[in-house]
Image 1 (cartoon, rainbow, N blue to C red):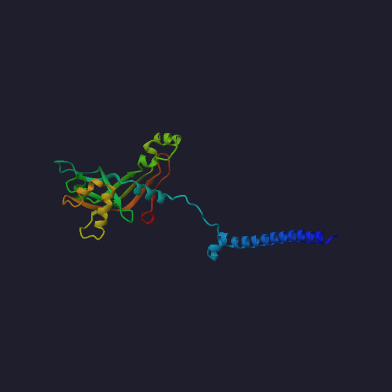
Image 2 (image 1 turned 30 degrees about the vertical axis):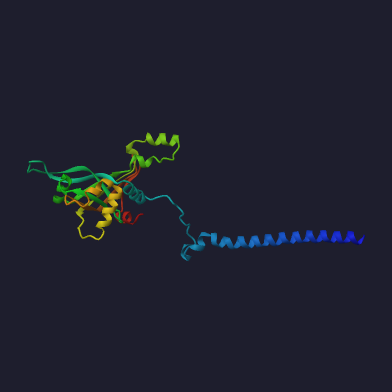
Length: 238
């Protein structure tokens, strides 16, 4: 062979060998990186030693407690039930429940905060008996997001109110002292949720009250599971 042909063949062989070596090195590095990454991707590697044999729970479905806290958070109004000890112009005691519409907000524990008039019948009832219940139901507007398709929107519009989730909070209600350090925050939060209240939050005829939950009942809707909710778990839910 002529020297030029020999040189050309040598160059071609060198290029081929170089390509093969690069591919081999690349595959080796990829395998090494993959083996290292598997250490970090293994769920048991981030669990305590005594959890190696257990299957981790990656469920993101909300619990009943989460749903109950969501309902009371989304709603900002409900039916307040107080106890009427006697009827008008009557001394006879019959302890009947009296329901009235109220607006509310929640504090950090999920306790309802109410702004009540001193002249309202429910406020008069509270002075006699602080036991109350607050019923709130998921509003239909919340169940109809603006971005849903026409078919979904039609379905949601046809959903009966009985199918919407609801919560009943039972407990005792008491006025919030004027020197409470959180009162100014409650006023601001209440005004943001209920703009009309800006004109009455500082009126001596109105006062803020707080319900301390003792029992909480959740209903997922008509034909859906209904159950009591642990109050402590409700307070910790976010």
